[in-house]
Amino acid sequence: MENRMLSGTMAAAARYPCPVPVICPGCRGELDLTGKAIRCARCGSVFHRVGGFPDLIVGDRFEDATTKDKMLYEENSNTYTTRNYWIPLFQRLWGNQTRPPRLLSVGCGIGIDVDLLAEKNFECIGIDCGNRTGFWERRKHPERLLLANGMNLPFEEASFDGVFCGCVFPHVGVVGDSYQVTPKYRDDRLRLAREMTRVLRPGGKILVSSPNRHFPFDLFHDRAEGSYKPRLNSPMSPFLLSHGDYRWLFQESGCTTTNLQPVHDYWGFIRSKHSLKGRLAGALPQFVFWLVSQPGARWLLNSPLNPWLVVLAQKPVAS
Image (cartoon, rainbow, N blue to C red):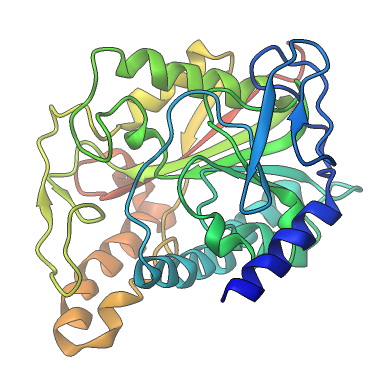
């Protein structure tokens, strides 16, 4: 394992710089990613590497548990979502573009989405502020992965055609890896939305997803492995977000439109397929995901019957 990690580290260092210009997340000065230490030419800040990957995190880190079993599950789950949901959706949104669309995955986790999108001719960059660099050495494109905080993105304005994230916003403005928000949670989430909009080209699109605050159960947090009992969710709790919350965030950030996308095939419910009990427990949410995504039932996407939201926001062409 150590030899593989060393080879991944050497490969990452050898293949930098990143294909997208990277700047200082503090002063936005020029950075040289090729050295052992990464120094900002403008403010003099020095950044280091973790596992061979540039650590450009300014602000909070996401200190969640990252056991091998959890990371393998995350890899399988994100593989399903990328292949069955993100790639078809992105092909519809950018299929007529003559050059490869440039995308940013905020909170990319173990980075499998970056590899899979690259296979489909998307130039995707992934950033994360968690503890997953030990798995990044498994990736085919380690030069496209950076440690960074979404509230301080190390990219120039108008760098990307699209920015997307999966269940990132609920974990911004909270105490550690919990459901308790801080007094400045709205400010933190607004800062993230503004950063995502800043690095977006005019006419570009943002896609965000997370559990629906108005749904009475949270199917995606605080479940022990093997348990299918959902977490009770009060619609008044600010941990999760509603479509209205996202609309406010992105309108305040300069996006002109937000609308809900179908959710069918976003989740594969992979873990639940390992047992009869799991398959039975997963059948109902899978049916609901399918139902609310049907053309005649899209109004249900914004109702308390829908457990999951995918929101598309667009930056105006002339800004």
